[in-house]
Image 1 (cartoon, rainbow over the protein chains, first blue to last red):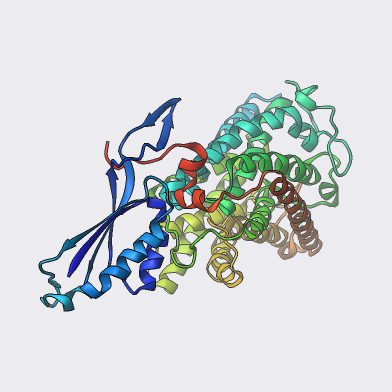
Image 2 (tube, chains in turn yellow, red; image 1 turned 135 degrees about the horizontal axis):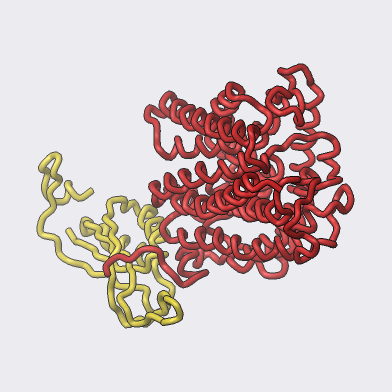
Length: 113
Length: 408
């Protein structure tokens, strides 16, 4: 089992979700986060003063998958989120020790899907 | 000159002005977070741009006697529009008081259309479209219905406070722009939900409050007619808000505050043409039934035809406005207003036919000219934002501002 954490551009969320649904990955957790990458994008302007170098808004996806779903998941995220420009984001893959479905107390692979 | 009348018309003008920020919050709450500022901005910039357009050319085109179809140019820049009464419109208040009251109607009408193209129109295109629309759709139609010599006015069409000029007009323009602009992206997969329903409630409150100026102010005097308009306006809004909630309760199992707000606005729309011509029981009927027709328009007809009237500008303003204009032909009574007419239920079916004609003419004229203006703007600068801008939201891409922070 693996835990995939992806940081993507907020406006790419719809496309990433579409790609994930196509490979039958339906169980995701989404949150809005702030982060600093290499990107120095222009953000907002308030009364003429340009705000750059601030923390930028990103979307963080968390997806727990069984091993055979790992590659399709990564490919789907890349396909949906990639523009080729700085700021597209990152994907982290972590080993997942355990997964428990609270309702049934099932454990392991069966609890993920 | 009457100081009471003048005071009431000035206060009413201020009330009607407040409806546009009210509408901004009503619509602003309904869009997604990334587009709320774009809606507020569109409403506010209309207050700026059309206030100027109106004193420079709009008032002259709309209200100078001119001919049956177009006002003259003699009142450009308010030349000759002074502080003495102009008896053909209002004999007891300064001409400029009438002018500024009418200015507020010219402001809110194009703002109503925003509901149809929200979340996907380029700001520059919006500005040009709005200015052209005000000049070539609103101003002529306003002249036909309300201007001295206007041909619909001469036929005897009744429109107390703007059912045809404001609501049907804006509602039809909304339908046309929604269709030609096309749907927002990802609409089927991800149905956009209102991002801030308390804003919708706040906006509705401001609209209801301001609408007293809109309707009761249209008496253009502090008199019994104004009181009648005030009372029936409140009654219709109340009946419609309640009936929308009841419809939802029966059909969906729960009444919603969003539904009560939609109903109240529909009721205010429907009573607008009738406010100076009907009594309180017809007002209640008009209000109770407008929610039924508007509910059908937004929950059955819109999905059936598949146009993306994002915030139901057509479904509420045009459909509610048509019902109100026709209801005026049914329920109008000379007992309420001797200067009005009797409707079908008071012995005169002819008035209903005149109302039907006024509605039909408005629909055809507005639809055709709105389409032409849209196409012109589209050819020269393009109306719709690109896909990436739409996905990122108009706040950031059109204005480089954001409404809400994540962390300080």
